[in-house]
Image (cartoon, rainbow, N blue to C red; front, top):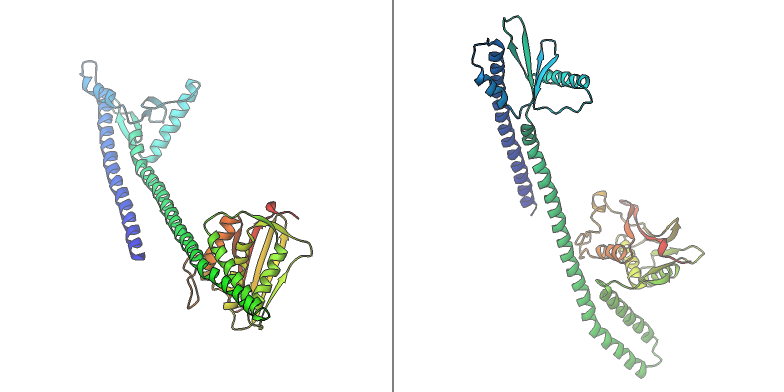
Length: 384
């Protein structure tokens, strides 16, 4: 696929280069043609200057009058304008017009577009100063405008394709999540029924409450998957309780050599969130942190209030993330694990950004020392 993209990019570059080259050659030919026309125009001026009263100057006048596109200024040898054609002057008086013409003629002479016309007797001469016609200048700029329009259309098309691709991926994730929730529903219902049967037959068995908790946990997981793809209704929730609940759950299911701690402020920080999905994000970050450790370490969850932002930081002492991989950690399918789908962080970003209108990112990471993930929510949605 990458080779196909390179071929397409190379083809686009070659096409643009060929277009500019052909346009340049065409404009050069037209410029040469205009130069020849001005040489003929200067000869007509010369014939008119050398003619006596009996000479037929109708052809010369016809040539001079035939120039309706190329700007021309005729000056004496000192640069004082004598006549001009195909120029529009915006001046309030004749002195200003003469000054503008003299300045314009000087620019033409510096550009080298000047022809000399000898006057009668050959002791004096006129200078014919000219520049490219408006049509030629427009033709010179047209390829760049054309490429600019093509570039804009290409950018729009790329964004449209990316949006279409993302929408298609979203449908796949949503369908997969809902189907997973649907498939889990039947066995969970059966397990709940079996728990009730066990409780009736063995009311004093100490293992039944633990089994019931695990079944309830499966039911919560299924409910989380069912909410993916639909906009959950945010509920005013204590983030202090959410962090403490996540830490309690993870500590009961993680090795004792991994210490997970919640750091919450003394005041209650409340936000309108989907508690089930937000807890899933924190659990996913904690599980990834546990996987990044060699059997031991620490994970700290910090709840912070900073100006108009409520932030949650998950800090671990794992193996860290390489700098070149940081920009890809939230990309669907990216994973550094030997086994894994690479969907956890992608779904976490969807939950935070799409459902809670916040953002999640890697605040810092250093290989061998650990990683800090940061979640930010806007406090305008909070109440204390």
